[in-house]
Amino acid sequence: MNSTVTHLEGAIDGTRLPAGQLHGLHAGRPIWVRYDLDAVRRLVTPTMIAARPPSLWRYRELLPLPFNVEPVTLGEGMTPLLNCPRLGGQLGLSKLWVKDESQLPTGAFKSRGMTAAISMAKWLGVKRVALPTAGNAGGAAAAYAARAGMECYVFMPTDTPVVNQFEPHLYGAKAFRVNGLINDCGKIVKDGAERMGWFDLSTLKEPYRIEGKKTMGLEVAEQLGWRLPDVILYPTGGGTGLIGMAKAFHELMELGWIERRPLPRFYSCQAEGCAPIVTAFNNGERHAELFPNARTIASGLRVPVAVGDFMILDSIRASGGKALAGSEAKIAPWMVRASTAEGISICPETAVCFDVLEQLLASGDVQHNEEIVVFNTGAATKYLEALPVELPLLDKDHLDWGRIAG
Image (cartoon, rainbow, N blue to C red):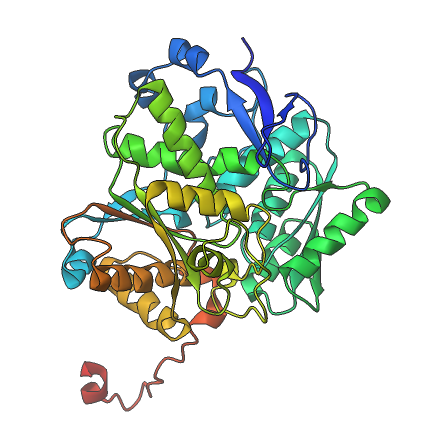
């Protein structure tokens, strides 16, 4: 057996689609990958997985790449699930964890989706890919495309953080700034597909980034001894990770590797300057409208419309969670507070999660004795504009020790 994939499935209508072929959207919406979970159960056990190297690809039977095909990899390790006793103590929490995705090869969780998507694209014969980005996806795509010997085109808003502009260029991609938002960049990718012959690697516009991202959920379950936390806070732009984790948890339940108990409550965290999922959730809608005048320093959250909106909202509601917006004014203070408390490089998107967590504790939606996992989706050092710093200047010949002592 070269794969446990049985077929693909249209997320909007359940249409069965053949595996082993190149797919984009179906009926204008994303596609699921489906597996023969009975076969997975026969092939591998949690004990066998535990004996494998701590790599994303340790879950090979639950990933789409055929077993006899080498993945395009940069050595994606199992990211740490870090206990946060000092920050938890400040919030009155006894069981606060941060899943630190900043330790992946490209400094962000985007490595997960891109190793899967580029591996599958290469196997299916793709030579050129393109995508829009407002943050870390462009650099990750460029890095994995370079690893695969593939051409990559990246389009980003003009005010994309400078590090995110630098990375695609570093990895040899053809990168461009666009006087618009990420959806405007996405239109360029869509319009250029036939003319330029590239494959659209946009969020959820191919089936396999979800599969790479779902390994976040597989890892959390394994790291907690094949059980799940009570609460997960996830910064939501395109929402692939949240969707992927929900898929992972359902697959693990079907396999019998975790208990059939209530799944973690997903709290989808967006910035108040770009909160289409929050708006749709509050309005009881299954689809989100384009968020007007989207602006936030948390660039990864500046996604004014998500093609997988209904998948995000379905996952949140099924879990008993909510979608909430964090304050723009609290992003920088929370980056400093959380990073100072625990020594973890907290990105702006995760800072939004901590503001939302404080709101949830105040409202009673989250209890102080619950086990909580917050996802840190990237390294703070990739967001120089989010936290401008000018250090005090000392005169080496006339040191002011009082000033140094503070």
